[in-house]
Structure formats: structure tokens, C-alpha cells
Length: 452
Image 1 (cartoon, rainbow, N blue to C red):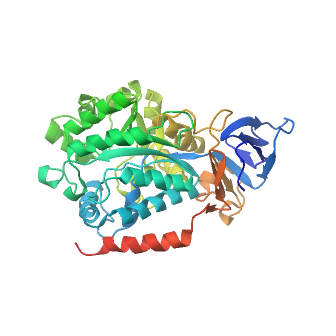
Image 2 (image 1 turned 90 degrees about the vertical axis):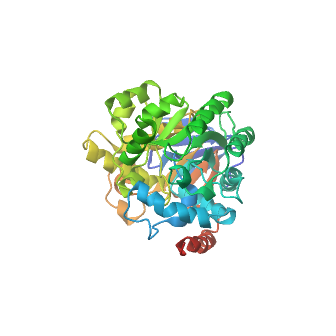
Image 3 (image 1 turned 45 degrees about the vertical axis):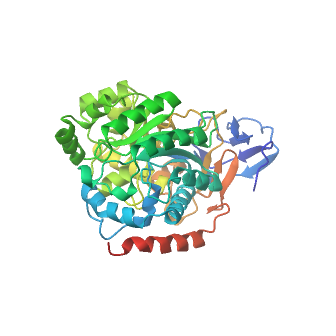
């Protein structure tokens, strides 16, 4: 059902809504949430009704860290059962040899489609690979998000320190510095929309201290300030990274980041695992966001993010699925569940609740991206909603509908709305031939299994 932009749609009488005072549903008009309908409220003014009597309604989930291209190398036999640096060393040569624009486009399409089907309405990709035939990789991502009707936080990333200069990245994925900096300006000019309700925003995102030069880190910080955009990088992910920074720069990763001009509220970091108490306090004091990637961190045995301490210190905490080759999935609801489970392993059963995990995946992630218009169900917010049913056998006997989505393992939304438009209906992404996509992507991925 397509809702005309001027129509007032009442999403009526859901099983539950993750918002106070919305027991009888939500009213949407012009791409915005315009009213919540409480238990005892009269029927609101409306033009159309969607009967949500089978649905639990969540805010659209927000993914703040991913590597879309990696859907092509999931569960790769050369990379399984390895930690981050050995894993990267196994995969970088394959990405360098076999990644091209057609395979990249399919990889992006699959990642975004998976995310959308899991209830994700806004996705950020950490894009840092630019083979010779895809200098417009950022534009490809924007186009694919537009086809699906999703919001996207584009990042113009870079790796420029490869194996020849002491890094671990493949030289074939790199561009020269002048090309990178010129394209950063171009991408910001074309895609960075600072208005509320934006469908595209841009951040600058050098990959990590172990594969990007100090000059590039500093140039990115300067450009971000000039153009009022955000900054993103990997930091605090592994002890190997600590050792690299100590050996190369004579300091820990966070000290290096500060020297590059990155310790400010424009920044959100991926992983943020290995910070000591003083570093956590510094991050919070400067309002640096942290994207917790529980599934990837578990697969690569990287460690457990200090989510509670970071939030208490003042850092926004969001969630990300991370790369589809270290997570092997692009599913935000699965990531929410893993955030809950790993949080309880680090703390205890009462200290990390399903509400915490869902907040990280919505409002917390939105804060990492610098957005105040998405991530909550409230009047004036964007009409980005994810609706789940409890029809599957896994939910039989569940007493608390919202807790059941997390504890019983919801993984596929029945309906997803972005900016007031239904983008998933009856579990299927609108306008996408999933079977054809699966076939085409699977064929493209076969190249990465070939001998180097």
C-alpha cells in the first residue's frame, strides 16, 4: 500500500509500540510522525488506516558501521577462525584482485536489502576501497540506497598505507592523496544534506591508524570542520592495533587520534573495545560516539565493548553489524540480540536490558550520526518504523511482546516504513526480486574463491 504524501495514515492498535503514550498507534503524515494515540485517546483525524493488530512497532533501526562490499566474501575458507589482522591479511589480496564495480554494486544491493528486511531504515557504510574502475563508489552506494528508499550515511573513506609502507592493505584498493581529497570535496558537495529528514549525509572516514597516513587523518579532520560533516574510523578494536600504534607512533591509539584533531563531537568510532578508564572518560568528555559491533567482535574474538561506562561518561553508543565478512550477516535485529547477550556477559542480567539494546540500535545510533530527526517514535520525528509480527513458532508463549523480539530472536520485519513510505510489505522489499538478487550476487561471489 502506497500512502499519498498528504494522507494521514493511522497505524492502528498494534500489539505494542516502543514509545510511551502510543498504545493505540501512530499517525503519519508527510513523511513525519504527527501524533501518538494513547490507550484512552479518541480516534485521531486520519484518511487511511493500517491495521497493526498483528504487529509490534519499533523505531526504524539505524546501522552505524558496515562494509557493504564484504558480502562477497562471507565465511571465506581462507579467513574463518582467525582474529582481525590475520583475517585482513587473508582477504585484502582477494578484494584487491577480484573487486570491481559490477560486483561492488551487487554487494551493496545485497547488504542494503538485508538491512532493510531486518528493520533497518538508515545505514552507514564505512567505504574505503576504491579499485581502479570504481572511483565513483560512493555514488553507487547512494544510488542503491535510493532504489530501496533507505536513508544512508555515506562515508568517503581511504586506505593509503599498504604492504609496501608497513601496513597490511592491498595497494590495488588505493588512490593517491590528491585524488582522495578532491573526491571528498566532490562527494560532500553532491550528497551531504544537512537538513532535517535528509536521505543522504556524508562523513569522512579514513580506515584505521594501521592503514592510513597521519597526513590523511589530519586532512580529513580539517575538511570535516570546513564542511560541517562528521568523521568516522576504526579505533580500539584489538590489542594488535595498540601494539602497532605504540611501535609506529610511540603512543596509544586514542592519543594518536587526539594528535590528529579527532577528539571532538563530530567523531564516532567503530568498535571502541580496548579503552582504559581514563580514555573512556576522555571520550565521554568530548562526546565522541562509539559504534558497538557485538557480532563481529565475537566472531573475530576482539573483545567486549564497555557500553555502560561509555554511556555513563557521556559518549553516544550505537550499534553496527560491521563487515559482512566478519559478521557474515547484515541483520540489525540479530545485532540487537547479540548486544544484549554480550552485554550481560560483561555486566549482569539486570544492567543491560532489551530496552538498552534497542535504544543503542535506534536513538543511540542516530546520535552517533549526529541526527536528532530519526531513531525515536515521537511527534515531529521522521516516519521511519519497523513492524514485526509474533507469528513464528519461536514467539509462541512469549508474554512481553517487545522483549520477545530480542529474546526470542526476531530477524525479519513484516513491514518497514521510511519517510512515510512502505519499503517492506509482507516481509518482502518493495521492487526487489530477491531470488534474482541471490542468484546474481552468488555468481559474483564465486570469483573470490578462485586461487590467487
